[in-house]
Image (cartoon, rainbow, N blue to C red):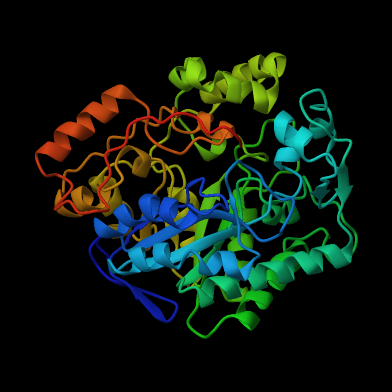
Length: 451
């Protein structure tokens, strides 16, 4: 079976090894420093040996759809062209670079971020269907007054926007795009019977019927990009939905979605177990007490949630951490089930923290590539250590102190002193390989002024 250092055929391309950097938030935005920020965030992974790098979620529309602060909008050709220095920096080190494309649909910032909502009073929240009852019960924490169900023509136009964004990426030198198919995205909302109650061409009782939007997106991307341009996607199973959500996507539904994606023509699939919102299921682990108590982030939390609601969100985060603790390789069984049903490579991420676990997953045929997200916050150059140390253990403790401050627009970095200290010791002994201008040894930074 495959090993971590084996090359892999991906579509018409070849990846130099089986290790990838999963999508995270780079908080690059659309400012003049976007290319520099992306170079700083992505190039260390490529320079240290990662075979495949995913740039985090980018929005395909000029307005709306933003599910987290700092996401870049890539509808504009000129802006995407300005990112060429970052693209070239990654590819110069031999890695393939794919950009993740997404839209938040119902679960966007104008729904939950108080300051963002106030700054964009005319922005609507676009939903696939009317929110379910339990979602409406959260009304004291959310603003449902501007929720509007998308028309048929709007969904078709949104699918074309994905195609146009992919065309801009291809022209700028990206090797492909990756669809944000899970974690509460518009794709998950279309697939899930929880959020899709439509009776037109975009809805129905089966996975196949609820895949119309996804198929239109794939067709738009293939029509607008050259042969060999890669297209990959996440696929969800809503196995972590709370008990009162009766019609969530089961694991077998997720496998059926993967079959649809493969039949539609994607080049690789990343199966992930999730909840029905952007919740703790996407980042299993401990309650981030350090980040919640840090005085540097309090103003940002107040801006996002309001002072009173901040306490409610914090309590919900604490409860979710108890219900969804860290689980090693939590998507492995889902990946194995998908791999048995599709003929394209399967990518496994989520809770992979040792080289031994990577070797086991690849050697047993559970997947074709292994990836990490948060561990790259703790060790930007972790690939060198993983590829050269058979007994490597990643430093990431899944404490989530890196994630919660991102609601303020803060960059994703490790903020846990003990982890940073251990990284410093490893760096001094040369565990991260030869250092270059893409080497990073960041500590915590001050929060940004605006989301």
